[in-house]
Length: 635
Image 1 (cartoon, one colour):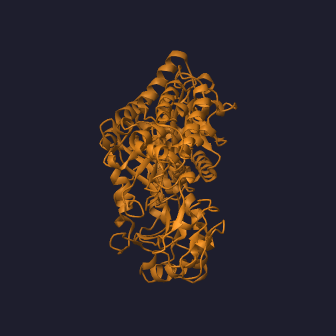
Image 2 (cartoon, helix red, strand yellow):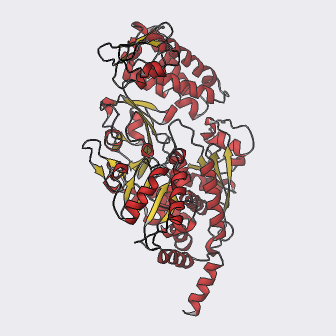
Image 3 (cartoon, one colour):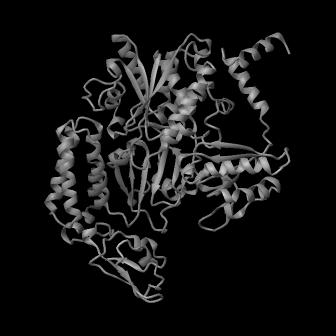
């Protein structure tokens, strides 16, 4: 070993990296220590899988492997990872290098996996994913349509690396973009590359990221610094967990993107605003920041470049309105998180009245990819003016619930029907709510609509942060619009009259419809009020709040009219407009409905037709959900 190499290893072992060469040397050391032929068990530790017992699964793997006397040559490396995406099938276990994918694994299954797969190299067929059309088991992750129809760019490391170990991230190419920028690019070069890529903010309306950064630089030139960079991790949309999964599964991607943004903008201080309901995300980010500081990738004189930057985590208190930029800033400043008028943009006067760049988690995670692979590479993904990929949370009445990443412009039908596997009963989906409570309902007739910022906006919906809630024929659009209005009314700060009074009045009108009352004129009044709120509300929470109501009226007006004119809920949801009964021809007398009824209002002898006491029935629907013979009907 030369003296130069000895000196280099001394620097690395001392804990701090002082150059791009140091980073490359550390990466090579980590890769050299890894045996790609050695068995590796990856256990998903995303929040969903943890809730289903994945921690017990990984502990059982470790315990059995330590005590069973398995030959050291085949003893696997047990690794916990972030969310692997296929949330409805968790807990998930991936066996490498074979790529064997196991679903719904329980601790009791571990011994069989070890005996069959790890020792004898045989799959446990009952734990394999089965093709819903053919029933044939699928052995590897890459063969499953849910995965192979996606294009995982932002999510490419999640589910494969240990988010608590920076060595895993460095081996996968982490911080290479940062080192490249600090050694070969000026701050202006970084801004130019982000602008050329066409990256648009992934948190809402899709404002071009490069233009936002340029606006901040102009403000700094005009009024001076400091400039702040902020991560918006206050993901509050019902049905959304994309940002949570990224922060939990690849926290260094977010951190590296933030540092790159800080370098481009000349910022020395940053903030990560994370909702307090994401404790695992906060924990992993704190670990990532501590590890990055130890290696000299965060803090003073990063990679000996002369550039210094550090950040801190602020926890949001669970207020949905704090996802709005100005409310988020006032919250960080220690005040009540309420919005303020936007006649002055945040890039000019944000935190403490200084130029501030706020992007959401997914946007920041895209930045290292663009700097590492180039704007030309990135701009070829997606479609014109909507470049790159987008991560969605596919939830609701869909077979394959989970995280989905596809190129911008992908048809809605491909996401819901091909990747998502369609709705459970095999029928067409009724609608898809995109963009959370601020978005809109897209009906089945628009199933081939391109999913990008501009196409969704034209349809009356919006991309939002990326929640996709799939509905079937048992979902009532009046009830859906009412649900989102209730949510937004509760979450409104009440600062402006259009939001404070307007949303309350819209909710009252919709509630009237759900009881079979009101008139067709009330629909016109509802539309007029919604447009007034859109024009007059102070912030995006208010201006976008009417979207679910307006889109459901636009695409499902006949369902509204059925409630008003016929006192009928076609979906069988609105309780005042329905009754439950049991079809005597379909009832087998199994008694399941009676056993589960919370009101004890179902009677009947064993193996004989049961009946429902409609006077005492509270129309909760439990009888319908528990009946295996479709004997319970909604009238």
